[in-house]
Amino acid sequence: MIFVTGGAGFIGANFVLNWLRKNNEPVLNIDKLTYAGNLNNLQSVEGHANYHFARVDICDQNAIEELFKKHQPRAILNFAAESHVDRSIHGPRDFVQTNIVGTFSLLQAALGYWRELSEPEKNNFRFLHVSTDEVYGSLELNDPAFSETTPYAPNSPYSASKAASDHLVRAYHHTYGLPVLTTNCSNNYGPLQFPEKLIPIVIHNALNGKNLPIYGDGSNIRDWLYVVDHCEAIELVLEKGRKGETYNIGGWNEKKNLEVVDTICATLDELCPRPDGKSYQTQKVFVADRPGHDKRYAIDATKIEKELGWRPKENFESGLKKTIAWYLENEAWVKNITSGAYREWLDKNYGARQ
Ligand code: NAD
Ligand code: DAU
Image (tube, rainbow, N blue to C red; front, side):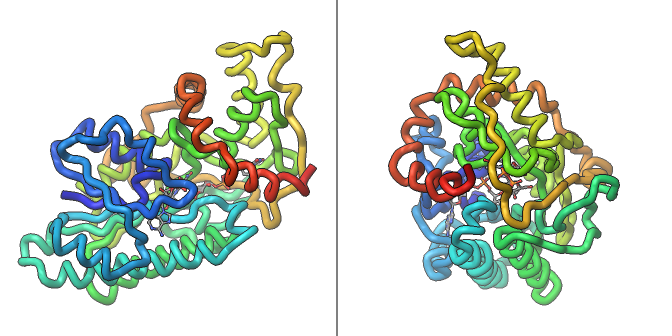
């Protein structure tokens, strides 16, 4: 069996679904079910013989230890995190708690379990930590892309908490020999993404006749990767990555935010034209910038390509079409999560920006 933490979130759920499609090995999804965790994401595998779920907070070391004892997994993959930069600016405490203390608790529980394993089992065990390119800080336009040796320089409470967790993971390998792997990935997009991040909020707002909020002048750059490509990369790192190593994962696909919003509008104009015949472009609004907004992220994914033979399969145009088609077909999913608490978040984050 493998453990997946945060499997009810965007990337974790895509990972679990992809895993069960391709493998015949059980997976235990460990999730606290915060606002970002949604069991509807996993409705299609409810009752699947290889899918199991435990509602547990990763900060609860005793509960995690019990799960290790009971299920004897060969690996744990840590997706669980507070993941939204804007929320980390409004309320950093949860980020420190889950991302740092939670990862520490998982490491402690995993170390205790790993030490009791037989030598062959010890050799096979893996602690895979899913992290982000944001730990490397911000690039200028002409800087080379982030590589695995780029020094850490996190700028937001979110990225600082992820950086701290990466350091703990690294230290448990260096000090105790725990067989860890770390992946640092760029911006994901695709089905099941909560409509608080750029791509899903723009799609959701466009379809509901609302403003498409663009922070600052829209010139910030991100590297975009289709979520299933990320999941495939993680699986490959789990099976073939070298213990103690980190692997950068990216889409070779840098885009200005404005370009991303324009492409979404153009795709929606084609797939789902507005009743009045006007373009979705007319809904674009420039709003006050994110404090400390990182200018540019770019990933050099040469290491994972050369060592493990991974490259993304989807390009931005094909991935975005699939994503938009998914949101158009899954209005009920969106309706379910855009209730009271979601609207409160919109007021908090966007109310003062207009
Ligand atoms: P998400 O916010 O959609 O989901 C996070 C999941 O973790 C939710 O199901 C939530 O309920 C769960 N969770 C939160 N706190 C928990 C706790 N204390 N105990 C147990 N479960 C808890 O996040 P995501 O976008 O799917 O990101 C998953 C991971 O990938 C994160 O570690 C994030 O830092 C990393 N990452 C994300 C991106 C991206 O673009 N979304 C890119 C690179 C890396
Ligand atoms: O780079 C990887 C990271 O990507 C992950 O570690 C994070 O978990 C994930 O949330 C994402 O972080 P970003 O801050 O880059 O993603 P977000 O979708 O919030 O913003 C993308 C860009 O779009 C960023 O430059 C801010 C801008 N933006 C965002 C929102 C929500 C807007 O212009 N308007 C918006 O309403």
